[in-house]
Image (cartoon, rainbow, N blue to C red; front, side, top):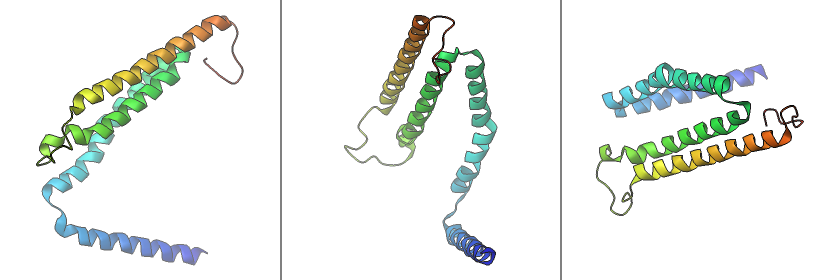
Amino acid sequence: MTAVRWVLGAVGVAAGLWGAFLLLPLVDVELAVWFLAGPVVHDALLAPLFGGVGLAVARWAPAAWRTPVVVGGVLSGVLLLVAVPLLWRPHAGPVNPGLHDRDYASGLLVAVAAVWLGVSAACWWAGRRRRASGPGTRRAGRPGC
């Protein structure tokens, strides 16, 4: 079985190298910068930033609010990632008539506002349930709620 794994690994590495060789004529400086800057920006800026935000939420948010706030943050990030190509559109070239005739920035703001409205409703509901159940009682299997 080990020999089969080594052969499959060697075939995979060879296929990857062949693909890189075929890609070399298409690579220009902008593409190389884009491929290199993405991981650098992620590792140097975004990962520490969001890690710090996660630690702050875990430390200072009430227990009943942690899950809704984290879900709201993740949904906001996904919405932003989906919207980036549409917000970046002025730099992409000519517009296809009828396809990009919306105000995507306003749409993103409305969607994020709806997410955080849902987060605030979930936090309100969790606080209401906690007050109704009493200060010393907790429901089994549902920590923090």
